[in-house]
Length: 355
Image (cartoon, rainbow, N blue to C red; front, side):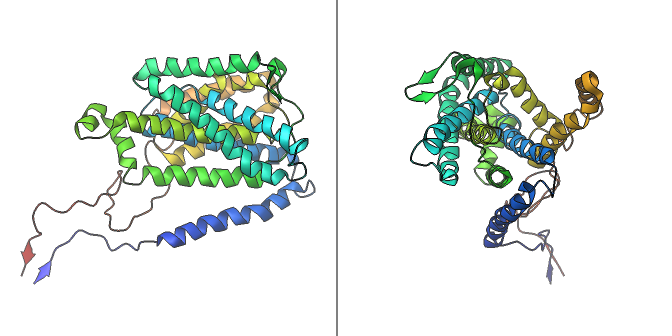
């Protein structure tokens, strides 16, 4: 007598192996960083592009949690990035250069990058609680207004107590602390956190909010909690990306954190495929690298870049990967379905027996 079963016999990678691999990848970034810092090995301009790509991956992946995975429409990501950039930049200038942490810049990065993310997350909470009663275009307008308020406040503030802000001229002479190692270590942390969150049991609640908020509420899911949580997590990583940018390029220009930056990040999410983590990463790489490769065209560069985006949206409106991923990880005790998340539901009736 033989039982029929559809459960696959795929091997499951133990959690400790995955965690050890992640730690090893971050560890390998340090010798790679030493190699990239030597201008005889690689052009410094290419290193700058690599840093920009890493920062944009963090921004796009974190916004994907809000827009693509939870189904909201935020245009305020540049504002969260500005909060993190100024928090980290001001504290680094005040304490790491002239204060007690002078000569211990690595301690400043460990302390101030997460702090910039936390302050941005608090701002995400403040804007999220009242704004997430809105949906669609109304939510986009509200978050856009928040981003513009942050930009205007920064542009018209000379200092906050002992901390110099710089008004419209920005903040200058920030020490170059965030080398390639720090940028891509945070890239790994951001991608792993978002990936594990989405493909966890709690992550299904974010997807339920996206697919049908009314049905999710009827099933007992606190939709407001998960929408605010998506905003807070996305804002945290946007703040960290801002801190990395501030300590990678010596200065902060408030004009950078305007409406166009928010739109650029949204384009990365849409082009990669809303809801696809690996698709958004791929789009961030392409949309950072492509404009630099078109610089030889001078004033026609952005025209051609825009036309390529239009053609891409006409040919493949769902994005590069849609909602699919470049790779898939099976979880313990799950059954993988095509094009969806793994499920583990017991059968309604026991399988038939065949003699």
